[in-house]
Amino acid sequence: MSLTLRPFPLFTQIYLQPPPCTHSQPLVTVQAEMGRNTNSEPSLERRNMKNVLLLGVSFLLVFTAFQTMGNIQQTLVQSIQSEYEKENKTDFAGANGYTSQSIIYASFAVFNWIAPSVVSVIGPKMSMFLGSIPYALFVGSFLIPMTWLLYLTSAILGFGAAVIWTGQGNYLTLCSNDATMTRNSGIFWALMQSSFLIGNIFVFFVFAGADTISYDIRMVTVGVLFGVGALGTLFILFLNNLSNSSEGRKETSALGAFKNSVSLFFTKEMLLLSLTFAYTGISLSFLAGVYSTCIGNTLAFGDMAKQLVGLSGMFIGVGEIVGGLLFSIFGKKTARWGQDPIVLFGFVTHVVGFFIVFLNIPADANMGPTDTEAFITPNAFLAIFCSFLIGFGDSCFNTQIYSLIGIMYSEDSAPAFMLFKFVQSIASAISFFYTPYTSVHIQLLIIGILAFSGTVTFWIVCFLRKRSLANSNSTIAISTE
Image (cartoon, rainbow, N blue to C red; front, side):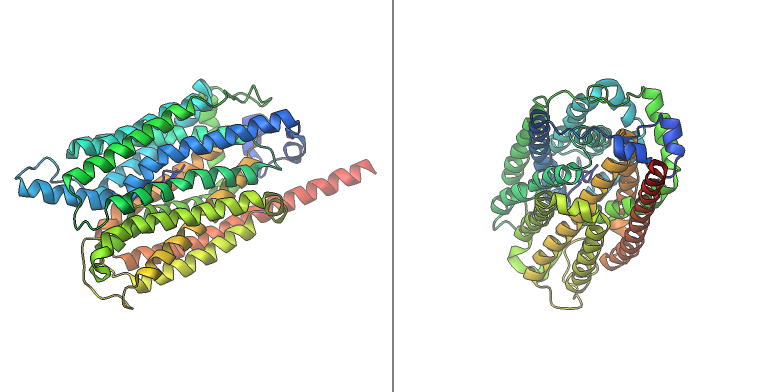
């Protein structure tokens, strides 16, 4: 299972006007759109690019550990329980990977509300460093499997996820301007999601030919992932120190950041975007924690079922990387097109991918090993192809959400990114909570409904923003005649 706490993950921007006034406005003011620092100096652009690349590599390492563990977590939990049952041990008897994920995202949602205040006090760089530590602790907990320790580190990880993703969103925005936000989001996303590919290549070969995950395989897997995650934490310390004040943007106090977050949440645009955010949370929990487990539980795949878990994670990563690279390479063109066409393309990709999953995977595959018939004979090629489609579609949604938030809330990004991760993590927590009790087909139905509604609301926000800018430009043109 994989958490891209983004989710994931998952998982913080500003206005030119003072926060109370800005958040009461329906859209970012034209002054904000026209007055942003363009960061055109070559030396500044080189510094910003170096920061974006180092940020991506740091997250690549941290999430190689975390997302790989998330992808295999339920499979690993089941193997540990089988091992302990033979030895009459009860230390891990009540553990459940889906419950662990639900705790992570619920904690993530709660701590999101204090994350902007943490970022405003210690800055985005140190916030990311602080937030990355619980990721390594969570992975390390599998070296000494105990139910209470798994759930405790899951709760602590929720705090870390809230802080690291709010800091990341703020830091990426400080490294970008309107012209480079889409490109930088794509570069970061491609680097970070390479963690899916690297970690799962490792798992694919370590798990090769294994019916269950033995003690030796577990210790090697967890030990390597823990070391990689710890290395990513250290890499964050090499980032340049950036802050709103150092980049010529308005500083916000800890209390002010919290108030701004509350007021921003109830604006029309943020309420509309909340459906899009919720969809990314539901789809994230499925692609990162449920789908690969379903493949591993499908007995029709034969002896390769466990290896396919790693292969599925790899191709989710390939889809994420391809999407991120496309949107970074063609960043200028996609910036002219806007974010809405790319989100629509992601929607179509997801609909195709999830429909094939509906046909190809048994309805009860999320609950344990099964030989139940699917609508078609389970096909390994189709299963892995769907992993690519789901990863690519996820990249379409997330990179464009980052881009839109970074442009709309460029002067105070932390509250906006926090709300993105807040809604996303609540949706993921709910999804992981009902996963053990609902069939794959019911989950896909929920995903389909949210995919449609989230895409529509994203388009509405983009339309409102374009209309507001067009009206503002017309007013300026008239006033200068």
